[in-house]
Image 1 (tube, rainbow, N blue to C red):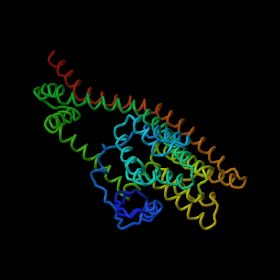
Image 2 (image 1 turned 90 degrees about the horizontal axis):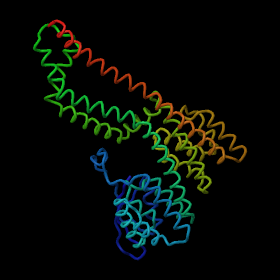
Image 3 (image 1 turned 120 degrees about the vertical axis):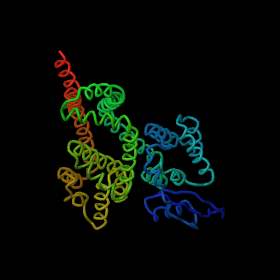
Length: 401
């Protein structure tokens, strides 16, 4: 959530800006910890168009990994935060990030903390990033927090790259199929269907359908692409609503083939992030709250937050996670072993490594499975064209002879 604030700093100067936080209480705490006396704090209603429009002033994940890693190194080398930001501002190659860093430098010069300064740019620095940086500032371990963020961003980047890599081939084939189909329906099939129409007589149902669709596509091709465009925007808008996000995230873990992959991705994130945060000295309940945002699935987020509440009541982590169908029994059993043997972080790291390896194997199998499916789709498309167009023409040629 974004909140617009007006406040006074310790010198009595009026300050105003935007702060991003998961709720109003967290926004108030973040401003108060920066020495600001809040005069007004209001929730900013996000523009609907910005939520559904797929293009925006974002920063590539790889750039964020490099920025976090380099800032961590500079701060670890005792370089003052302001100087470190200025050095990176000159080095980054992404224009959006350079502009944002310029604004952050100005905010830090005015007396704001790094966490408050980056919170003004929610499209680049989300809640998790702000929270982890803020925790590092409070504990005096900002360099380790930034290094942790770089590690997590890099893991997410590598995982997303593998998924995108697996989808490159089918996406290319599908795009080529759409392009070739468009050319055929606009320029080639109309001439062939004219020949079939002129011959008269009865035509197969497939041929009648192709003739009708060809005539429709010639006139209303733009309407089909317009409907497709707004359908995509509509889906994006629905997914950005609270109810739509729950439906979408539930669908991702229940879908055939892909559901198992997504479930293992979320379990790997849960295990890896929780382990890293505990090693970093963050209290277990706070670590669970941060992890709930890092998993990036509202179903698992609610499970993890509910587990954090159960921990407040005196339960163990394993018992707090038990009973959820989304959390396999092997996970709760291994966590229980880790709690009993005081090796929880090591067990969580092993779980993360196991599920990450499982994801790699599933993605490899998915790539192998997609190839025959694409061949079948292409064969079906060719078969329809042969049955609907070429066979009637062949029969016509035989009848003329």
